[in-house]
Length: 451
Ligand code: XIL
Image: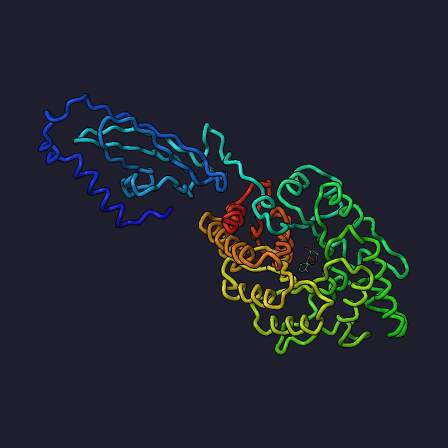
């Protein structure tokens, strides 16, 4: 709850007024029973945010009394009647919280010290102990995804612990792309994909297959294909059919084509080897082969800058319209920053998808906290701005109709594992967990977006 400054001033005045000599005009002789005012309070840490304390007062009193809080944040006292029972302590430190009850100039005071460290409030000396539910349980109406790697699911430990607790949809970061699954002609290698798919099955999670066709993950033998265009097409059809058949019933959805459009003016189709050898309708062909191989699997087109670029969004929706029944959903990569794109532009991606009756995947969500390289560590202010953006994205997603919901996927678990560090070459903290797997403010922003 926000503390309104005006209320604060008024109530402060009231408090000091209550303690002044003017109260002496009350005729004590009219009070027949002895006056008792006994006040105390306790606090608990919010279940959704370890920086918020929930204050609860208990007052035994034989008379009407007024009560006030001083949260120890500076700024004086506030009336208890304002219903303020939750306070957020953003900065690490010690805060003296005081609860006052006042009757007839008689003030009862109860105080407690609240200690906050970088993990949140510390009740009983244990910081950040506000136990939260999980992202997947809180989301309820859609899947919450993240990425993993075969080596990580095999290693177990904290990574898989968080995967199992928080997420119910996994995407392979890079091992379900063509260069890994089809390293040389006629020779498929699904060992890494199998490891992740098996892990998902054992733990009751969905797998989102990412990505069958992506110009950035094409094996060199495909880039330098030795054969005719007809042979190339047969090869691609075989690759899609083999892959989808193998994972039938085990992979819920696939990005059939990833990032087909260029960013430059007009957003033309990228001149990938697939377009060169199969023509402009290569995307449609790939979707058709995927549909034929597994009629039940959900098929997505996935791309970036869908929110930030109106023209790219239009190009993508035009393609989607041309695909008609062949496509089930749109994957909007959400590699964004705390500064933008704007809420309205993110909303436009959701609206365009919903109006077409398609499923929406907010895919590859990460929110850069340091796009301008103006910080060297994640400051509390910046963490709060990032938290607000996570909340906004989740709120937009959570507000779409149920039938359009699919999944929201975060591109990584821990900050230090984010692909963005290499990609942009500077320090950043774009994810929900820090490098020690502690929940960040961003994590709570995600939860807040669901409220
Ligand atoms: C990235 C992975 O995170 C990296 O590990 C890999 O080296 C390159 O690909 N858009 C996508 C993702 O569709 O597949 C990319 O993932 C990030 C950008």
